[in-house]
Image (cartoon, rainbow, N blue to C red; front, side):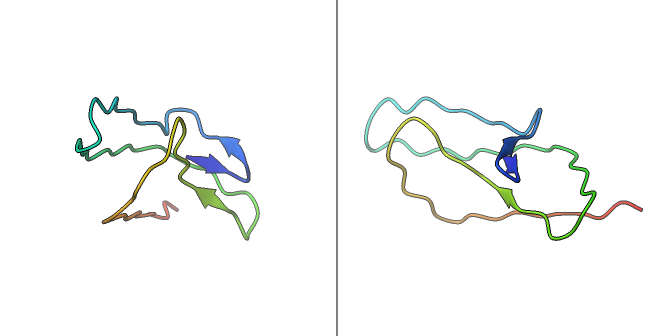
Length: 63
């Protein structure tokens, strides 16, 4: 995951697909400090062409 275009430490997940029919469920948990709004968080896939489905993200504010 990236915040403002920079990678967030620990916010990664990986899977190696062996066939075109392979599927995978990936998840990660990472604290993110937002110092100024608005903030842009982006989940980025790398290494090939991907079809995404059933995508979700949950963000909790800790005060």
